[in-house]
Length: 326
Image (cartoon, rainbow, N blue to C red; front, side):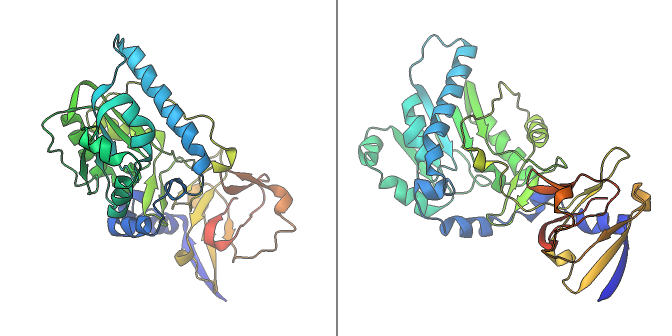
């Protein structure tokens, strides 16, 4: 075994060099979605049963927006846009029920081809109910429609854009929005115990915190009209599965938390960390092991992590997703 010594500042420098969104790779994201079957099950990650609840929640939210605006006419909105539409689950299940015409933006060609195979598509397209279909990423999307949109719906898609791209995208949405229209963003939120955005290397996306979303909305010049948490999803969906992002923090009232990725801790090494500068006397990162018999009773699973209940003890979890507490 080799013994490597690092200061707390070395660890912080190693692990926080890049923001989570810097790791987004659009080509990798397209490759991932091309590997997913063009079905409701594929779109919803193996939870097709949530579709009805999701669509009803979206319908209820829009109805509240319209009531708050004082809409006397609850008829169809003239134009809606389904962003990251996939196979059209939201287009057919929700937007066509609230809008006269729905345009579509989707970066994965095989999904739009499947959308066109949906029963009733041909008739809806001929009647002008389904309008323009653009196969492009949101980061590149530009509207060429001669009209503006009363509703621009974004759901489970903006995590594939970097923060900078997302701000610019929101600005374009604002430009293409009809007077009194809405831009709706329905996304997962980070459950990181450090309050950080989380990068998912499986589909090359970022799950953002509520605070980050609000910051990006402000930078894009958008005002928040209303917010709501989707209810009724199975508890097994939460917390969202993710790999911890790089973060280390400590205060006098908090235990130290360090998230470590596999490439940082080689399997043939033990890293001893000097954390005096972080107001912690000592902390040892121990090589991966499955033997937790002596420490398991002191660990509590919270938001996908194991947390030590005993602040005087140094504890460890498996190397590939370590949180080390002192």
